Image (cartoon, rainbow, N blue to C red; front, side):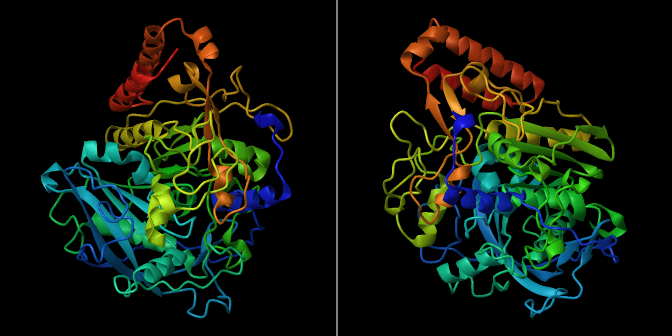
Length: 545
């Protein structure tokens, strides 16, 4: 199956585009002097919350338009955040502010003023606040905001009482917001000028995103009168991201964490959870060739730092990275337990980059697009992936196929957050896990079992007590505006009745095997109890055998 797939030339072009977003394609590094040294970050100015009603509301906010309601006991508010930032490029030993500044950046490369927006989801009664703030630079890959971290882990955050902060992290999305609601977003200030790298997703001034990330983190770390959580006790400030913003989060930890500080050289972020990424991102998005690390730069793997990082990837990243192992798999490195190099890498076989972890009737990703276009989800055009029906409306698989993939990647991610907090508070190291197995061919292939499921990685009953074959990517059957994302869509093919009958004598046997592994995973701290219970409940309601 996977080993025999062939992609047409157009699909390879789409693949190259998506690999660039994942941080796989490299340009030469230009080494230079003048590396940035540690400096104190300014606290940004905040205005809001901005009033909302049925005629004016935040984009992708819960309870408005096509979006699902805000979880019970939570409220969601929108704020504007303003400050200034610089644009950086890599050197052989660190990063430096871009100088000379290319002519295309007419506003310059330093002290660039900005106003972006952030959504704050918090317990209605702040006495229920856990003290943990999860901050995500919202994913901009589709040209609109996607809260990829919240969308997968919302139930865990709400259960624990964590606050989630998602902020618009690229100028192209600021432009989209202002087109979507010119009045509400009139005060946003982050001009979109297409980058010379030729990517419509990159803007000339996007390099300030790392300064903004540090400043928003500092806002909640300081938690002064301008903070939406002023008057509460903030114990942990954690940055998390997935896919393109997973690359941002990786880069923040790898390069900017040690440079952008609070007064007294104190840290801003207590830890990081990058996901769905093959390493550090471009830091000036094509403005100069030195914005992206060379393919062989050792800093493509996470470098030592004073706070813990748990990096969680799906099988899709391994599949794509293996197509061009240098630099695609250069992020892979041994786990670390040293106080200045606490690091875990968890790779999750069966999971795909785009998935439907909660079996929602419509992917939130598609709801976001429908909201942007001011249409219903039923009016959305088909994406064009081979294993999806080519019809308008929510994505669904062709007969006999579940597409998007419903493997619950979020279960491992939730455990990563819980383990990270324990690592921060109690210096309790998370468990180790094997990496997804690759063979020795050139390029390498993922090693697969008799059911064509990946071997190695964080093992779960979905693969060890299988009922389906999980495929980490899809191909393009019809060229559409969004078919370039098919390479990130996974799907699964449920086993037929005969295969299920040959594996499990009774339904009770199947459920018991799932229960045993789910309990073991929770004991190992690779799953949380609630997610283990959910897996057992899924098994109990499945038609197996």
